[in-house]
Image (cartoon, rainbow, N blue to C red; front, side, top):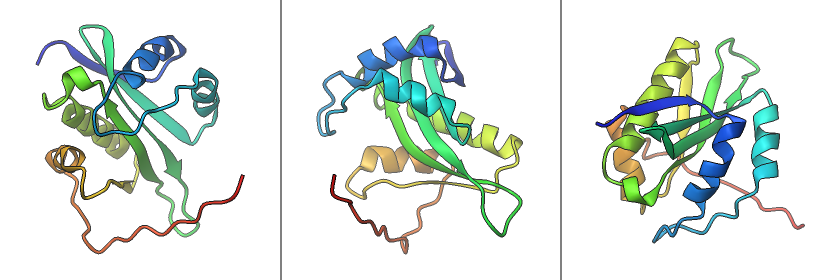
Length: 148
């Protein structure tokens, strides 16, 4: 791999994230980019985000949040999103980002980490499996949407 590096999301990464998120990404829903929301996300201590840089340019990110359980000392981590710029799909960069994050979470004493994806998203499923995650075929997602 070329010069692939990872670090915590920083204010200086936001303009490059905007370029990455607003690129045409066939098959994915368009993302409305909101720098103010990213800055707000960054101020909340349970939220964690990393970026992947290739030769100094942002090509991916992972973001999620820490969960403190009522009956466990160790925290859990829920990965909410993993995104890689479309030009860099299918090159292993998402997998490397996931491995980096999983190692960091382990080093920081997290008990478990979770990520959800649709079964009709084979690219994401392969990425998570290659990073060492296992699929729980019994899991079900229940949700409710509230009116605005």
